[in-house]
Amino acid sequence: MTINTLPNGTTVTELGQFLKNPPEGFTVKAVGSAYQVQCGEENLVFIDKFHSGDFDVVFQNSLGRKLKMHNLWEYTSMRKSLLSKRIYVLVSLCEQNMLEASKKGPIQPRVLQEYVLSINGGNPMMKWQMEKGLDWTISSVAGESYRVEIDLSEILQSLAAEGLIAENLMKYNPTWKDASFTLKYYSDALFDFPHWFGRSKRSFQLRLIRNT
Image (tube, rainbow, N blue to C red):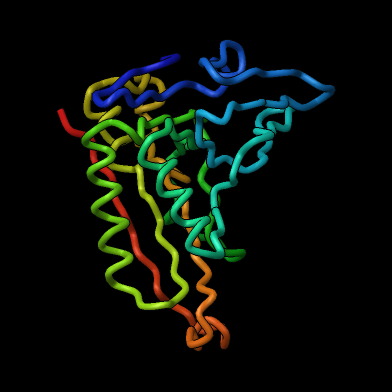
């Protein structure tokens, strides 16, 4: 599999194929033992620097997998972008040994293949889901700091269900890792005592699904 397009304009591209033939709005440059990926302002990229094979990969205009917002203006600007731009996240298909353990602790799952997942935040269905989830989150807090995880795992599960994962990978009973990104809002309200004392536990999950 190189690239798959799902309903709503969602795409899943093997990392190697993405670097070799980047989509519109991206340019890739090999510098020594690293790939530098430049992304245009028309896209939202939530990908941290990572190592793949013998190379480091850096998305230079990436916001990072965990984005911090410190005031209402930053939140409003990010919300507008989420609901209108194309969003990119790095995900990994892994051998399902995440529940195994050793004397040294949990065993890290073996990565079988890395992909760049892209969803269209401006698609009516995706936009409706995110807008509804963000509105519900805002209505559940009052001047508090909080975080919301936007989970894309259900969208990825449809790849296996539709036979879009290569058979040689399916034999490992694979699972998806890092199929999300997180927005962290730090309130500037003086009365957000749980945050100031390091005890803020306001955490929400916004799970996106695909429609057919």
